[in-house]
Length: 277
Image (cartoon, rainbow, N blue to C red):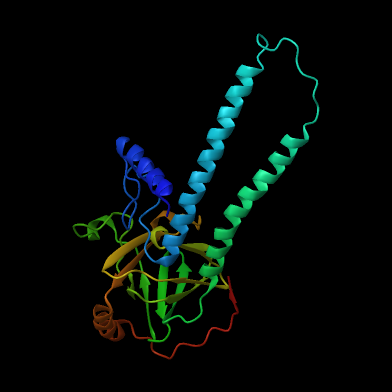
């Protein structure tokens, strides 16, 4: 990042701080938060960098257009310009207002397409997890390990100290850190959406269809919170997602316990549907 870009971000963070809000949250939303949550994983980091680039571009465009409007209103007011110009064409201006927006779109398109192709690359994943949306809970299936379990939101009387209300679940999706994980998302009834902001993952869970995404979380034990953001029925607001990242050794220890508790009775049948992005 250039020095100008870093100074711009520092200015934004300072301005948000003076308003009493955070520039970025942790692994869950914060009260009065403005801005994105802290990115976790390479996809989230690239998406945040693109967001910051677009923020600079749209801010510069907005300031330029505002300054142009103010200048035109002052320069061509009736008092200073009693006889209006009858000019109908200006070749230079017409070329500029055509070429400059095209160049801006190219600047935006290059990193956008680079990120889209990066997000679409699900090859060479270290593990595969199938996520199924139901009314109104999630089912997580570790295909290679032959375990599966449901994940329901905890009621208020089930919450432990430190667990956020309406975001905590009984069985989180446990994954190893520093691992590329392919996530197959499908549904059993109405349309749902698997959405975890800090991981920059959001894809629809549709019955009869399998969507592919992938995630990789950095080292360290962190819990990431998300929700179904597709209006899926009366309990739509009570369908949270909790992704718990562990060190690989801790994940292996959890996996041994999970195989005893959540082992499927039969081997997982291969998914016959073609993956659709």
